[in-house]
Image (cartoon, rainbow, N blue to C red; front, side, top):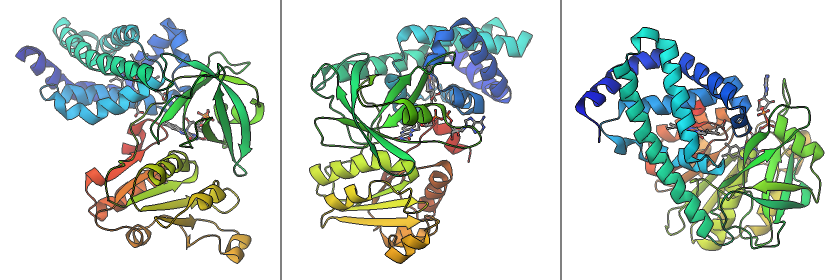
Length: 400
Ligand SMILES: Cc1cc2nc3c(=O)[nH]c(=O)nc-3n(C[C@H](O)[C@H](O)[C@H](O)COP(=O)(O)OP(=O)(O)OC[C@H]3O[C@@H](n4cnc5c(N)ncnc54)[C@H](O)[C@@H]3O)c2cc1C
Ligand code: HEM
């Protein structure tokens, strides 16, 4: 695919690009957004500010450069990124913009050290990587278009119902505004929501997992109101401004965090906080469409912020064990015996509810994800039995 010279140049320049990686990506995004302000609409600008997305892109390009002579090593990473891109409607034309600005940033930061030969080799390498993504993303767009209720681009969905699930989580039930069939999706998948907020300079896009399964009337997303030093932009706006009857333009669902249905291995679904959303969808799918035994472990602060308890209990059958772990139970929780375990997820809990052939699926905030990954590694669980979704750029998790 590449000449030996190109491979040699790309591999030998990975270390120097790594050293300047953060500066190059900063310059890259700054230049790209200056010249193409419309692209800000699709990026999560909070991830830009905190650096997780710039690092994710730089990390992916450099990993690719280091493996340029054995591209099969990229396999699963390509799928995760392509699914994310497809949810955001990335188009082939955008790859040319990214390529031009990326090579421009390398030149700007490295100066004379970035010879024409180096830029040429990286240009060739980027072109090949872009071609891999463009081809997979076009396949995804075609698969989605041909799916039941499928379409290309976005369609209008109307908010039919809003339900308060806990003091911090609201569910939005979404129906097709044109009355057509709901799109088919796999449990655990997510959609991208793009909204305009008056007084801000660009649109805001965020991913939300579909929290339901087997309902052919509504898609459902469940959003946690993010508060902190600065309140989360989109989640707070959805909570405070969106009402029944409002419309949202949505793409087809995306993602590859989905359970295997045709296996006998027990499924351990581990959720912390709002990470329950994809797992609740998977739980319902497994109940409906598999014979697997299911352990659903829900980790939350306390009973006040615990969502979906009744929904889970109402659907529970003999194949299901529902376990709750409260880190800070209230006196009322303790009095009512609302939780089985107090504290955080631990090896004891994981061992108690799993067998050597259990398959683990988990989702939650960064510390929970990092801890669970570490505990499963300590338990020598095979990689093939570990699956997770992270509510941000994957690379953020690797840094922990
Ligand atoms: C695949 C996927 C699925 C997801 N599914 C769900 C889901 O089902 N439900 C759900 O609720 N979320 C989900 N998310 C997360 C969601 O996309 C958003 O990231 C989340 O709603 C926060 O967005 P926001 O605009 O409200 O917060 P942002 O404005 O993006 O802020 C993010 C966080 O940073 C903090 N922050 C912002 N600025 C500052 C600052 N200057 N200083 C300190 N802290 C700051 C905010 O308080 C907030 O906690 C998912 C994410 C992904 C990638
Ligand atoms: C070969 C080129 C590219 C590579 C290697 C790449 C890599 C990545 C990676 C690693 C992520 C994070 C995925 C995750 O962990 O969730 C990502 C997300 C993303 N990519 Fe790309 N990408 C490329 C091209 C593009 C193009 C052309 C666009 C469109 C302009 C684009 C837009 C996005 C957006 C909007 C996100 C989500 C960002 C966020 O949440 O802030 N990417 N990409």
